[in-house]
Length: 199
Image (cartoon, rainbow, N blue to C red):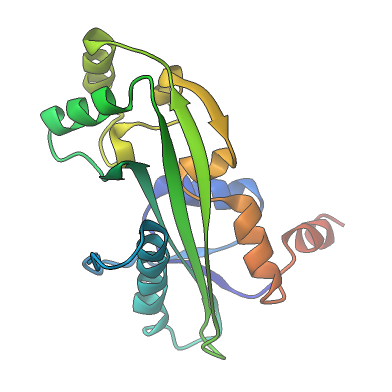
């Protein structure tokens, strides 16, 4: 299998790649995220993923596939990561009883050929009705920090979720089905490589 580099410091993305048996190296991108207001949300998220991949790929001298990714929560507008307890509280209150979108962009760059491939995945998440006490308890758990939309579906945040339509792993932060399809276009077959390693 070609060398794979994950241009992200997200522990959730690292865990998901390990889950499917992918061997990879982490070289996070520290680029400043800028958004063009003229772009659609899906264009924005794809561009952010691509820019992260480019930021890391330009420093790599060996042959490798660099994966950039970005995930946002959308309810009328983009809900980013909370910077304060009040911001987290406001986000969670706005999500209660409503359906929002989780959109992830993935971009892969081949450092040898400079070929790029970028796509996005959308998942719909419906939250149940919940009140201030539950929100405050959740914030007190500390899980809301560094999470788009102020919740983690793979943790205690799952208690707020009533229904999802689409890729669960997309909500965690890395749509594995989409990633697998993109890697195939670069000649990487995860299942075939896994079987060869096991035999």
